[in-house]
Image 1: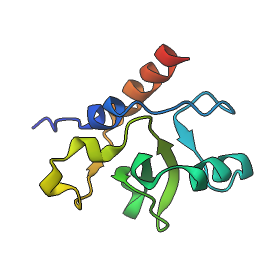
Image 2: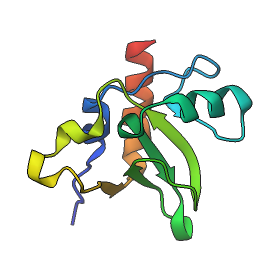
Image 3: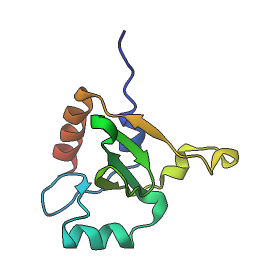
Length: 109
């Protein structure tokens, strides 16, 4: 059974490009990246988590099992109805999603 990718939810919010490495990822252990992450609106931050070896993208800033952050132009709250605004969104990154991300990075660079 094919699992449907949800990477378009992230890309619809228009991730900004990290000028240090031309990717959408910002790493908290890199001083310049960490400054950008901490100054970003919570609703524009997504976290790439690796719980139990799984690649997961989740809205907001997470501190446990995090690998990197993605900062978007549009807040992720635009994906929810007003009544759902307190909800968060998490989805598993599929192997093919990394190619989709790479294509996005090339297109906006």
